[in-house]
Length: 327
Image (cartoon, rainbow, N blue to C red):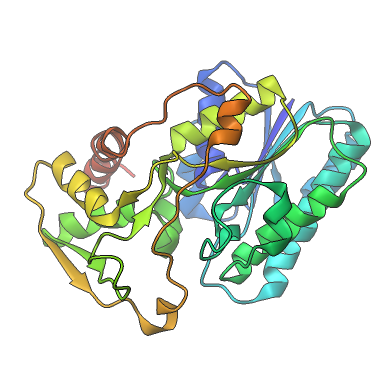
């Protein structure tokens, strides 16, 4: 059996559907299933059973030889949350418990790290184990992810294969429940549908024009494909960046959403809030050479292709269903 944690969330639930498409049905899904707004992410997918997040570690030790692989995508991902105790519990200690099980029973593990570990990018965006101790994340979420990465690299007892995936700016279906933490594509679509225009942050850095701040946007399907590739191939264990390797501007992204809706772009610029201005990232771009070197040759979905598919096949479809009152 394969276990997916965070299976009611964005990436976990998408990956559940992705595995179903590949023919996998003997799946265990783990999450806090009390949130009604996340139910649609997993209700129509195939799995054996679902286990509450709080019961999962005990279940693992009661069924020590049942699990063949674990994809640990569950985490507290709110970058505006500053209660470090929550991150210690859910992102660090919980992940350690899963790691220790995988090491003891020799179960391969792929887990979610984050590009938030890179902070302002003072040391670049290379998935080099030598720089992990030097990284300075900008918020408790990023700190928690980096703390677990550091801990994992120090462990003598390890799973037979493990990979920590440093997700960059992931967008795509099944993020409807994330609210403020949803992708810029999601928020752009909703702003444009509501107002006919899109707000972007003004640049407060003289090196960048308004809207030309850069991010590495990656479509969630590519995330699923890489996670499956790593588990199938089980190359050298370690941390792996997961972006496209090509940064794009927020103006590019906004125009792509307008184009997907067959509308002329109307973009306004607003000041970046002062409370986040000194921690605002003007550039992120994944160095993807490490993944390429181990044999991953699939081309990544372009921003234009990914946004068009997301808008036309998912966001507009979801809006139509809601309008008809079918949900």
